Length: 219
Image (cartoon, rainbow, N blue to C red; front, side, top):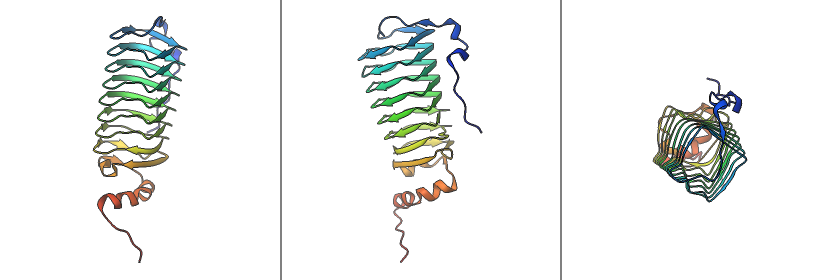
């Protein structure tokens, strides 16, 4: 199955209804059909805020607390998240393009039908998060923690996994065959329920042997 392609802002069905986002983000704020363009939010407190049919372009979030925020049918392009608390947030029908997340906490969150395109993840905590029908297209996932997470119908076409941890994760219908590199630092035994290619199996063979306690010696 070919990887999905991202949409342009003008292609969104709600593009004609978007209004500029004005002012600062507020805790428990309700944002419907807003467009944040070029905004910088430093240490914003927007916990439990709700974003519906909204767009973000060239936006930067530095630190800040957005725990339990809800993102329903949102589109994001070139958005930077640095050290932001997004734990327990809820994402549904979201599209994130050419964005970067560094030192972000997204543990115990829920992501359903979310697509990431050309995004960079660096030291992102997705522990105990539920990911369903999520796709990472041409992404870099470095030092990402999926520990204890539940992944269902997740794919990684064209993506690079570097130092990713799957300890105690539960995988179902997870397809890793499209990944260009599988750098798994921990939790190789949690790959039950995933599909990999024969080439990837050979690359992961030493890690599988170690997880099973098998010693491999030629002489």
